[in-house]
Picture: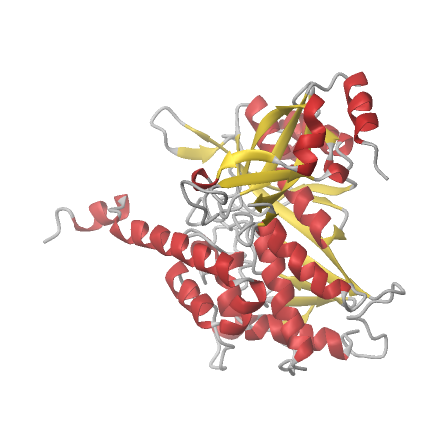
Length: 443
């Protein structure tokens, strides 16, 4: 039995006066408020209150018992924040009217996890965050924060690592203090782009940790005069950022469900079926894993000054094949569709739902792809089917995928499609600089 009074006393002894009660809106953005540590009982049992209509995607009204969004603090998530002295961070579950909120994305993921637990299974997720360090110039134009970071092919550039070591070391220190087990820090394939990898966790903890990673990175970048950006594709001729999920499932005895040591790809029947589920629902999953207009600038067959693109635009899978949507590695599955602008709870929940559908229906996976699909594109060979090429196509695919929407949750999907359709409409009605430069004085 957890003694909340003891937790409060312990935190006060560390100089903690407030809890940052944080939840995630439909867009995947961290929201919350500071509440006094003395009332932790209330924040755990009832929740910190928020006006429901002020939060994207809750579907709550302006009045009545279900107009208030309550974020209930999850005690096991309490962490003192190294960049906010006197404050402890806590993840919240969304409730309304005393019941779990169907449109809350963390509750969404928990419901999918319950489906796994009924089978005695656990989903493990390793997340690879890629991001940009940006700033705005005097004209408010966005550019790379480090003006010397300008190589055409900057992957693993140690000079950029050295110049930005203060930010990277502060990230290392803060993340380590927060309990992250770091694995590597490197410069990625675009100027200003980095990747920081840390150890995998069970699905819910992995999603919680990614949200905490972003919260930390925003704060540390700001301290160094930069902006931490999860925009998938900020520069047209440079590679974009992904948020690859490394997925594996173990049973109650800890055995790997996806692995078969006797298979050529080390995949079991369930592993192939899970892959088949991902590919079968890939169009609909695009909406949740690549949820912005800009996401589809990344998911494109485009030229990069680095000479390399890793964009997974074709619905195929292969052993250690980074040109495929699904890459299999040593009996686990790498899902390469998500980007860092996604709502990580919804993206993992939808990915799991699609994979389980493949297992439940025993869907056959296609033949594994054993070639570079970008080289194949330049030949006369037939290509695998492509993913949706814009947000509108992806939203239409999600709306049409009744199986996936039902498994995820109709309430959430309705809110998501409605808000993202408006985002697409706003984009289509916007007049861009490209249009003015191309058309203003032509006709």
